[in-house]
Length: 163
Image (cartoon, rainbow, N blue to C red):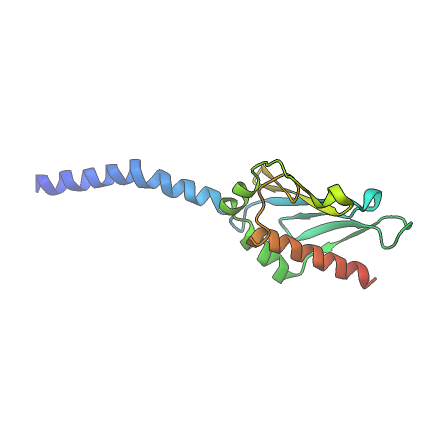
């Protein structure tokens, strides 16, 4: 009986000191539906002063700033992203995928060096900011977060063309 009690006590101690903290750390790095996030994206390069940008917050609302045609005034659109895009975005906001892509690198060549465009994303999840840049961080263009953010740009481009 004493061996059983000591065994249970040791097991509880090992769980609380070894596995429970690890489980809490893993829970902290995944975005939950109640997590707050904000994404600000800025395009730079060949578009000069007419570069588009957007802001999306965790409830799905957005502000999209763009120039409909050359020489026109910039327009601000506001609204709410469609639910399928919101769900895809929330699923892609995995810190384990985002953090390695936020590592700064010195690029040899960027699109913006030759009058092309590059994109910066400032992603804030529960007050922690990550910066992903097509010219300056170690992004994986085939990653879920990068393709999801590209899909948001496509949504905004279609929105602008339908007005």
